[in-house]
Image 1 (cartoon, rainbow over the protein chains, first blue to last red):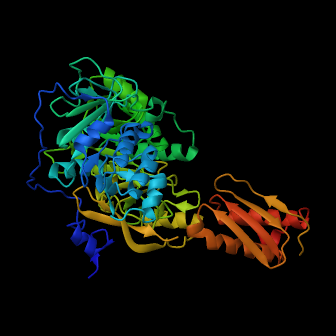
Image 2 (image 1 turned 45 degrees about the vertical axis):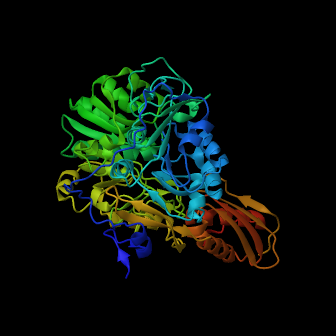
Image 3 (image 1 turned 30 degrees about the vertical axis):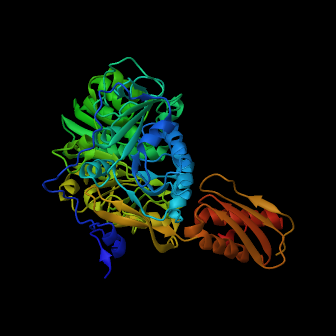
Length: 514
Length: 97
């Protein structure tokens, strides 16, 4: 029997059965009753938490076969992951499951070394790029990687699908009992959003900091009630590599044209009214959208109730100006946004569950009106790939894509082609976000509206300067430009499974053949 | 047509292709380094070969470094390199376009 899911992807029945997975069926979550798990608590008065050696903590906490976790808020400035993994590999520990919120480029070499040493035998992450993505796509890890969105990771932790034995969490400040935040110190990154899940649900919580401050430390995002150890290290991160630095507006005419059309789509939609909410990404076009949106909000005397997600300085500038009333902040992409979290009480730190967990009593994404998201590929069924490149190799992350795409108006902004690679294709290489949650695709030549959204067809079909195409027409335009590519070749071996946010399987990634 | 000298056309900018053409003895040999080898490698080699054949070149060594160029660019760079190699840049081969 060939097992197919509702986005027409063939799944391996043996793996699906072995890992006890259900195929993806629908974006609807419904109203099920969920039993959450609770962590083990090692009772302490808290007077003996500070240790100055990672070796001692690893010895006391990490055993063969355990699940360990990290956060990726330091992004490419992370020192903590490599420091801890070095000790774990050298200790000869085997068969670990690595369950970080995501993996950044600076961790790649260490992960590959740990896989080769047998230290890491399973990985679940939001994504991976560069040499590690290449290594996994060429069959370097025996067991398939499980990719989960940020909201789904929160769900999986609460369900016990991910049971974290030890969480190693780097922080730019902490006191001796483990009260910590991401805002003060040398390597600051703002919101601790993803790490808050680990702090709440891991059996052992180890903080690593280069900045031990007076007790009690406030505001405390991670609390002393959650923390087992506080390790002093010389440096937790490189502040220059955490954020993208000063945010620069794109001058690329193609990106500006796309951004202008995205703005037109938003302002002509029924959602553009006082109190609306939005989430934008950190790409060039997304930042330009924020700038155009600002002008439209001033002109129409409209303010937004909240901006959500990964936050950048252009968004916190809107908060400062009063055009956005609250920023709900799960992570900060630049220093400006991180600094703003410390100074502006209307910028609220939220954890990944509050942000986007589908099995919740209401997540922020459920209240979201407009989401502007990017894509590596979009197909004629509106399915989106943000995970595998045009050569079939893993080079991306689910991030919050599936989660934010549940907004009332989800816009994918992408160029028709990138170089010789078409962005709009007959079938995406990997389905990450199902077409059912995508409403409008915006390219430099015009837009395509999901035919399921008849209401939007009515309101968006006659915007001056915004031509409307069918998604099939856009696909043909792209193909006419670049030609018809030879299909990619894969082996039968599955190297990764992509979960939908409800924990079902939306697609599998196969080993590349070359 | 006989190749008189080694010639180069194109740059290594994205969406361009750099073609180096030199004397060959054993038919048209294309060595391609392409960012889109998996999807378009065969097509690019084929297009370069056909473009050279249209200029009556039967033997040449081609070294091509492709940065995702479209077919029209590949053809134009190949013709430019070929005419430089043949010493015929003063007589544009319009019919090849």
